[in-house]
Length: 252
Image (cartoon, rainbow, N blue to C red):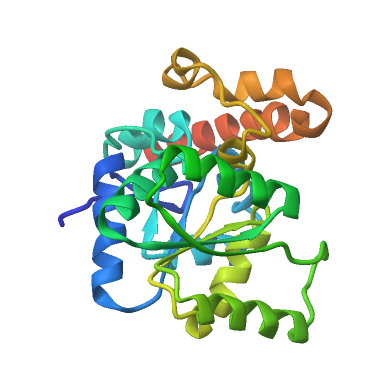
């Protein structure tokens, strides 16, 4: 599949549609090798301006999908045109439908046990033929012990999933996958953060009109102002500042 890649502020973003992203995931499964899928949004792109390891991980990933309307808007300034936003939730839904049809197996790691149980119940209702072969809620810590890490790897590899969904917030989830990818026998490993909350029903996504207009951030900020103000107020401002500065530099 011929997919164009755009580098926005030095961050790799693949110009894919939801359908193409799911098709690529299926090709990863066919290959039998382990692949990392990253889901950069505006906040992640801002973080990567200082966190070089996070940026390196994203740039070296097998697939980096555009989770954020602003990324699609500014892509044309970087020599590409990203056809549509593919949020982590959109990618997950596309893969869930694919997995139900083809018999691919899912494993969920991250969040709390209550959220994981809610995810299984919701998926059983929405995708009754989807096979969830395992879930695990790791301890809340900046750095997991090697003993705990080995336990997690054993659980995942023993379950033999085709998709590993990791919800530990960015960039912790991306760094964990990257550090352990060579030990994971899973074709598709994706860090999807808040998607766990959306799937479980713990949190609601913005209405479709707000999503299409690029205003989902406003909805989430309204719902969780104290937790998300830095991400959306400061993060959005910095993103615009970095892009404008980059455009001016390019023209000069």
